[in-house]
Amino acid sequence: MLSHSGMAERRPRHRERPETGGHGEGDRPNRDLRAKHDPPLPEAPGGNAMSARPGDWRTEAAELRAKRPRHILFLCVANSARSQMAEGIARSLAPQEVRVSSAGSYPASVRPQAIQVLYEIGIDISGHRSKGLDSIDAGSVDAVITLCAEEVCPVFLGRAHRVHWGLLDPAGVTGMEEIRLNAFRTVRDELCRRLKVLFENG
Image 1 (tube, rainbow, N blue to C red):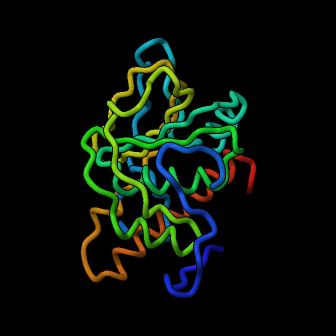
Image 2 (image 1 turned 180 degrees about the vertical axis):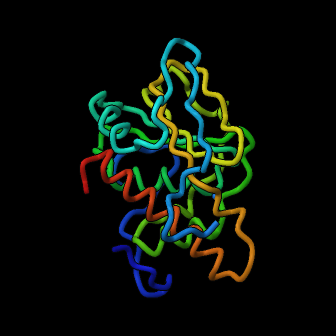
């Protein structure tokens, strides 16, 4: 489905720039990437219910699509892997008028493996940087997608529609570099699958 070709074999089709919308963190390739015991999420501050069906991501994607959000924010802890890949993929799929951002509660730096595996599918996030929640205008965000699984996700206090897609952190995988890259590819492919449904591109 998605190519695992080396970086030298393809030129990226999309070069991402921070804070622009529209176009242009174990390795479990055959298993669901959601956390095993992902509990129902509570009522969010401001009266916006978070997802009551954490496993039913297709229904969540359809509900979010129906709301026609103009600014989608992806959240995880470090804003270094899952949320960065989600931001890059979403920007390549979203309509031009949709703004896409990502942030973390403890921003670190963008993982080189995240940059590489998106480059493999023609998306360049080499210009991205990890950002904290304080860099986001909460009032402008219509939808928040949290991606944490084993960690405690950041709390977003804005009045946005919330969805939780708990994906295991590929940055936590150890071993040979190819094993680590495959963990990032697995999460990348799952994000592609879900975001294509969200934006009706698959």
